Image 1 (cartoon, rainbow, N blue to C red):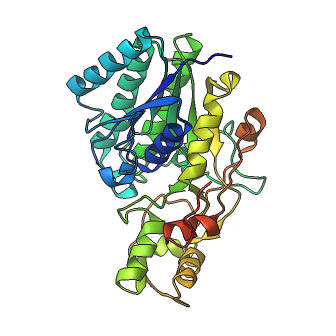
Image 2 (cartoon, one colour):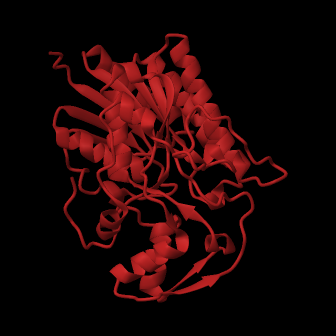
Length: 336
């Protein structure tokens, strides 16, 4: 059995997927985690329980800062020369829908930053690279009645004339091409993961829909939603399960062939019913909902078929929506 110690380098480590991935790896005991973040959409609080851990090294670095990234690369290369196995996971991204419309920002971080991070992984001799992509790439064709959209389905994207929002999806799609190209050339093993809407009890800022609903009900007793929400439905993935997917793929070398994997649950809920469910858990029956504003090119549903990752690994979700919301609300402190 190969007992080499492993070092996992995680960009965006204080974000939703990054912080929980670091937590699961650190708890394993045999892993060193080197993580960095610029706190674009998160804070150090999400990894406060890890800061004092000997096998967790955090740096307040920016993926777009060349000097800082060179420091990370030099550090990791030395660890590799000392015999440690190296794995890279790119969780850094310009997130929150409001930022998808800022094309230059999404391109700089989500595309250029990812490519440089991938190049660094190759340079230091990393065994594998996980590229965190998004289900946003399915754009306006993000559901069907045959078990959900598959990774092999052709994509129908909204154009710039429809909405600048699609810049995020197009950028992430390009990172999948970079990943596949590097694997096909024999430079590294790896894959891309198209996550559904990820949520977390560590998320502090009410930018995504679940923390927005919780914060609104706590602070104002009512929720303001876009007009789109009258008909929109979504499936939600707890970050415990998004991280379990990353680890499951890292443990199956054959799965790291440049492929793309959908990661989601089978639970679908309307946004209106989501407000009602959260309200009921907070003791608020029939919470008040105000509708204002409209977002172009916002798909009504997003249902992902996850047969591929389930067949190629042992992954399946373990946190259903009700339990995940309990964790976000502090009702259920136990985590698997």
